Image 1: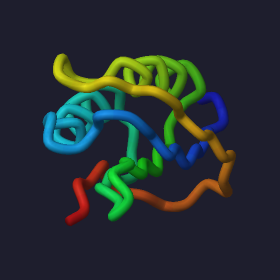
Image 2: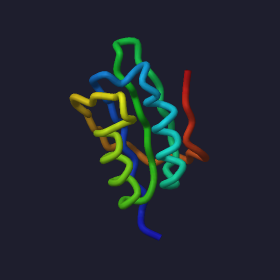
Image 3: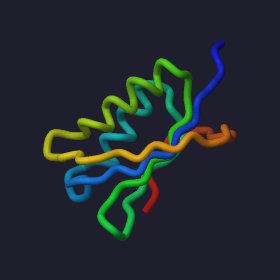
Image 4: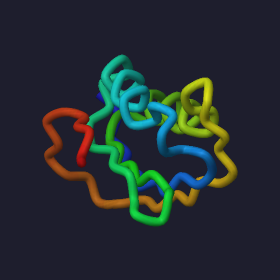
Length: 92
């Protein structure tokens, strides 16, 4: 098993009110990514994601596209220390 990777993503653009969190959870679940996603007060979306390197690459690529009505302008990526996440959760 390859080592896991953890990333925190701050996603900017038209990413709230378009189903971004729900679709991110569906994509993460399909790739066995664990972590969370939440809306931020400034209109951005914050994602904490952890999983195998290849799956994480696919997930981050999806994050640049998002759901059909999203317009992603920029993603800030920060590598983090892996944690013991059990699932991918939508936070409110």
